[in-house]
Image (tube, rainbow, N blue to C red; front, side, top):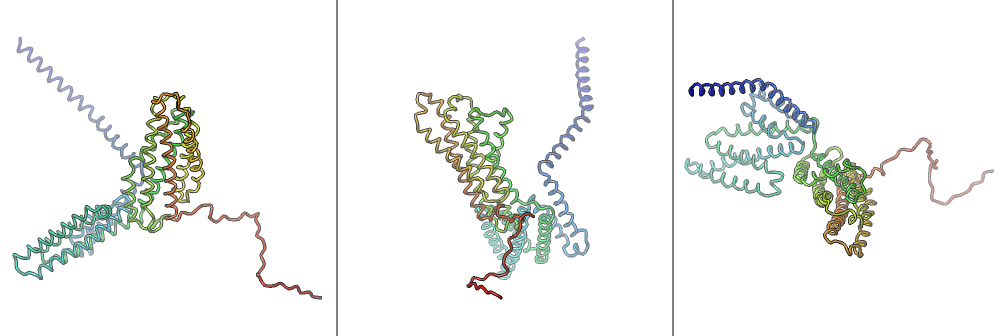
Length: 460
């Protein structure tokens, strides 16, 4: 009887496993289709976030197709041989999203390959001319390789070099070692090195040309727009903060949407530095002149983040419900005035950067915010806070102090943008030529002007 029960239990477990497997097998097509739909939606989302990504993918494909002619066209393949593959490698490695990144990598790779190849061949012929002994020659060549690669590797740690030429130094070490080491065994290294250098330069030229002339994506323009949008986000927060904190807002939940925008400014430093580094490689384009002051954008970005840190602290007090509204109501008017006017000033500064005009429109708002700050300091010196709970007063005073710092940051930001306007030669739109209306008539002018004495002649 026990064996029968055991067989029944074993059969039941096996049947359950079979049933579970069949259920999984039947659900497999629906799960697979759900995964495919999810992947396709992610692909679509990436393209919608920035349609230039699709353009970049097509540009890289075009560059690779063009450089493949080194293999497909017989005269080119006969000239380069297997070294033509280095042109394909170069296009794949050099092609980046923006023109500045592509141009920087292309120039780094081209010059590094040329210099390293020449130095590698020079090292081989120098060692070969000094010593003809089979034992001494590899020792001298190894010593030379050791010293040069150690020096180049150390230079990569320098901040100025690492920011712009790190990739070039890496390629230099690679090419120099390949040429100098292989030259010891392969005596036809000169012809091989020449073909590889030409194929690498050709691939770099193709990649750079496609990047510049086919729907170019400029890192400088991205940096310019990023700074403008970041400052605008700060202005949006400050315009709504005063009334929201002091309980005068009527927008409800929709009025709190401005809170989250500024947070992206706090983490924008690395992106700004990357854009500025790439922009320095780019030629003049559009509204950006040759040697445009890209470093000034980094200064503006640092000031924007200083303002964003204080705004982040203000946001913490905005979400805190520990301070009663009656305590906040002791200094509402100057605080609201400071917050609103500083927000308007920041939005005018953002507009000035976007339109590339002098930031003079922000000056009235900055002046009004400074007047409100002076009034607030006068109120804080009075005995307004007597007979009150100190723990309830401190948050309100902290908010007032942070707003005073925000006004100071806004003024410094305006000065920095004015400096950018001077360096980049921003033009005021009001100074442009305005055509005359048809109703305006020109005053007739005499055909000649004579500053000498006038004589009256009477003719009878």
